Length: 257
Image (tube, rainbow, N blue to C red; front, side, top):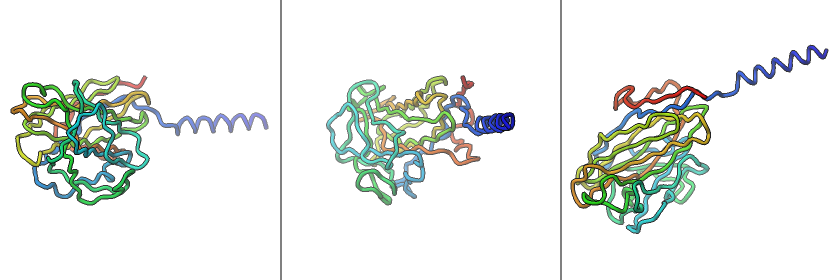
């Protein structure tokens, strides 16, 4: 009888080990970028649909710079997206008048309004307080995203700009840094946008993805780039990616430790 118990116990242990999720190794890739110049964008971006894990938007309308900025609204219970901070120094701020071409919908917000349909975020982009062709080059915004070592996550990044090129930098421990500087924003209002899709998976719960969006090639004294919203989800089975940027362009991977 004891031998039978031992055998059954070993079998149960073996099954539990097989069923346990196993980290596949750190991965990071830029899956695609969609340029948005239409005013307004149709249909609106659905943050709840794109952010099953977490989503956040920023819509500060004050021109006063702050060291960090919490989202104006976010997914109820979401914890994957950090507050916004400056990249390269200075502070971050919004604007009281400018808008973007983006429109947004959501249904599970943590703050009022907890739902919205086809809403413009009147604060426009959140950007570095130091702007312009003389001082703003190389400056921008940054935030971090928490991942899951057992499964990949997709992050949708709603960025934009004015009179500048957007330089996207993605950094995570154990993989090569991903950089893209293909989006040029002209001096047009409402501000044009670029929606990036990123796939990432750390090999440790302590490793976060750092996202930076900075301005380069600024063409006038108001030039800048910034962020409006972020969404994080677990990709659906079989979904490979948008493929707009080119397969393998920015893929990085390392073996699990």
